[in-house]
Image (tube, rainbow, N blue to C red; front, side, top):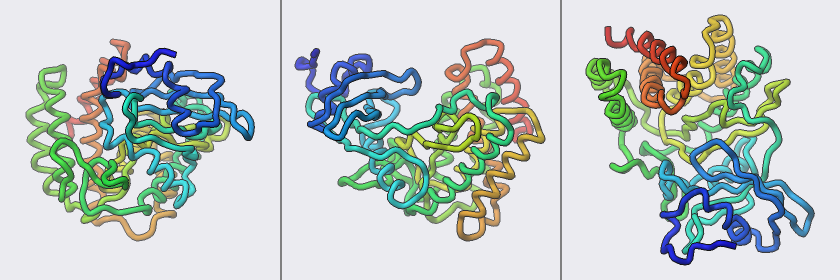
Length: 350
């Protein structure tokens, strides 16, 4: 087995080297297990492996996730297994059972954790393969799951969720947690616009920056934040392709403490608005999603729900504009999406 004795920390590791250390990583969590097969996944920015392991109780299929990239800092990455354990205990959201986790290690790429492997097919790219009824079920269950998620815990600050002193906490970004939700949102929008500046949307940056600087602070922000799974999309779901039943909700590594309305807007954008031009289908899916959410969430929505949601849809669109080169490798498709982005933002800046 190849090891990394010449390196002092796990932070410098190349993700492609991680498979060589998988048996050691599993042994840190389950010393009496033996790794029989390792299958790396092809998607995602982290190192994720499907494992077949021999245990005293028989053979098991599990997943090992190691945070080897730079997208998620360790203090944030350490939150995922803790969030999974919390959701398994307090909600009916289908999340994998955590076998164990390691926050730090002197010569292994920590943090990492092992969890059970759930059944179902990954939803990535399946929108057009699912029937309208199956899609409606996906969105209905998404509404139920988000309603439960938003009831789990509240926070008095806003920003990224991580771990402090061994417990879940708002750790924020480079500037730390924010006392106001709109401060976090505006900073995020400004950073996104900085990334767009100089590219194909450069002519829109000035007017869009002017809009968000006026519109975001004018919102009536919530006093408390809830867990926001901003990347709740088909690519992070396991589904039954025939029925649309969600058998697993994945990727809990980078949650926000934020406005639940923001979460509703991101789910609609990722799973409905950016997936189809069919107006009738869009309406059906959005209505199914909102009806399920409202039926399972206590209390009434904010009085400025519509205005918040309108601003949030724009903030989501800015992220899509910034990620255009990464999301679409085909030049023709990129041009089509770019034209759609321009058409969408026109109502905000004209």
